[in-house]
Length: 126
Image (tube, rainbow, N blue to C red; front, side, top):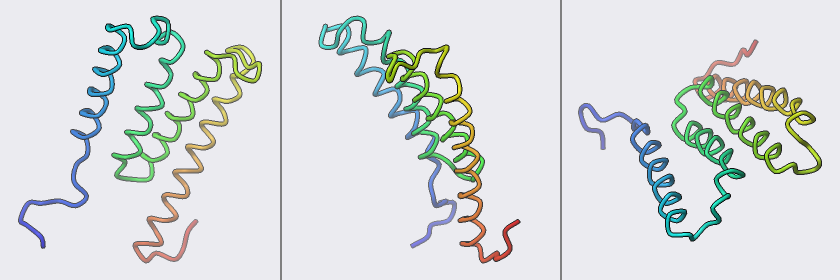
């Protein structure tokens, strides 16, 4: 059933901001009631960058937006790895991961464009 003025897929901006605000509110509520360690924010803040990337992916409307969301998630993962020093990677030693994140975003955009063209019936992909 279609209704006049109803667009599918619906605009997800309200959903994205709503989920982000709820998540931040829950985090601060838990922190203020000492249910998470006080220093947790100092080491887990890159998770917010990853969450913005996920929300951007959910709300993506075109291949460029998908690529940007993947880059944002990749940079968030890099920040998380560097903050925690996982695998011996510090800020100084882990910077090539930014190049990997950019490459993943470019690849994701290319794949999304390929899929979009195929679903629209365009056979030639250059």
